[in-house]
Length: 347
Image (cartoon, rainbow, N blue to C red; front, top):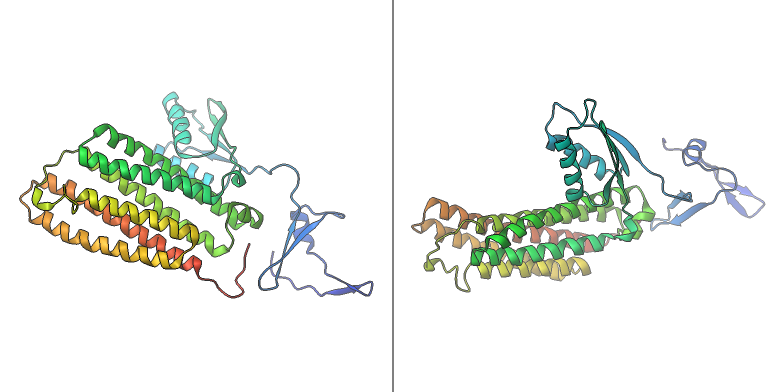
């Protein structure tokens, strides 16, 4: 609807009234006798929303799996439809889904898309439906769950690297799928909140700019999960590390890993409380760890090690540095979110 101007009318000597655009009223399904909710915002503007009808309106769509593109290419389209909020998605295949393809679709949906379930299928169709209620799993809940998994993975990855525990390393690698699932769920929540102020409040998003801030935060957390996974992958290849590098002392990889873990924990605490001073401390600690890693990297390059050993050591150290950098990024967003703007609009 284009911008319109309406004159205020005086009715009955004491009541101010204004007419509603008929096109908007029709699209919103408003009729005589219905109620509207009016919310006064910080800048004295009014948010007008119609009362929601009983039962949730299901957003549905159809998506054809192209035979000309790979499975991953097609699945990316499915993820995109999931992220924009479709509740019912019919996957179509004109020539029919092969048994192996059908099985893989079901496995990937269960593994990557929280709340999505297969509710029907035929030879040429697979029907997916979301049973997730956003208000039952707030943004804070999702971020907390995501962070707990990351911390668990991080500790186990460092332990696997230190002890050469292949089974533990494999477990860490598998758990990264959980991080990806929560990332996609949170992005879906944030997209829905942008167009639904009532939902935004329920899941804990107070301002429009907070949605962008949280989007950056969870992306950084998802990338931290990827680097923890990388450390676990490196631990699967035994490396002979000279004592001169100090990796078995307090100056070593384990000590650096613990410092990175503490920085991440501190980052989450500053975010939870929107504590800007603590966020600044986190940034300083993260930068200090990054500087320390640069010195260790130079020592690794100078050592007489095989190329393979150097690659695995440097890759693990690089991932620890990237974890610290992403923590600093989250802390910077925390400072931005903690800064108030006079007259700022809230949901």
